[in-house]
Amino acid sequence: MHTAPYDSFAAAYAADNAGNFVNGHYERPAMIDLAGDVAGRRVLDAGCGSGLLAAALIDRGADVVGFDLSPAMVEIARQRLGADVDLRVADLGEPLPYADNSFDDVVGSLVLHYLEDWTAPLAELHRVLTPGGRLILSVNHPYAFMLNHPKADYFATTQFSDEFTFAGQWATLTYWHRPLPAITSAFTEAGFDIASVTEPPYDPETPLELIPPALVGRSFICFLFFVLEAR
Picture 1 (cartoon, rainbow, N blue to C red):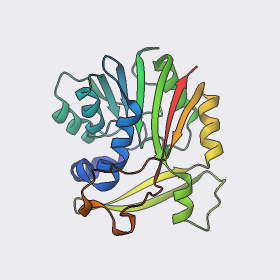
Picture 2: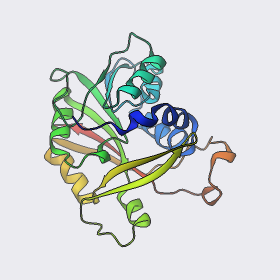
Picture 3: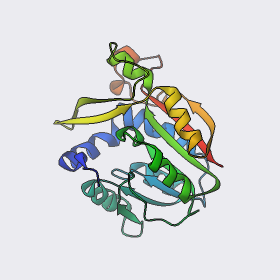
Picture 4: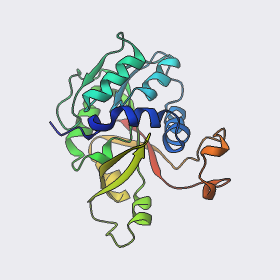
């Protein structure tokens, strides 16, 4: 099993993620909007983190189960969602503990870009989806990588790290950059059709004090969002 770096700063990350600009008012609202009407649908939250996206989907009537690599994050999610929600510690890089055709939707919020190899993870997510089921994803935008690393080779699959402060605690996160053709090819080769690719704005109801001054009144590029359909 891969290591779980979030264990060392899980509580700080969960506190920051709940209401910050990038997660709370940009990425998570976009994922909820893409999921749409989930009432009565069986949803797998792949990389559920502290359970905030799962909670929003449950509030909209979905039957949600989830997993995460980090035991500490899963425990926070359990505290948030309650004992009745099936939450497990599992590795997206390994076979998943779910039967074939178990879910109408899978949501993967900012999780795939931690993995170098997408072949086996996408095969597993395809396996657990019903035919025609949706895989709803957000990943680091490949163009944003070039803005921050202008001397890098855009077309190379490249490992990189960024430092963050979550609720006053420093943390280093390590990702894998992929160019857009590699991303889309991975999806189609895994048996998915690409239903939509979006670059949504942040939530228009975002409190002004949370918006970086340079972004007030304008859009920006940070993540790329996909809705895929299992063939």
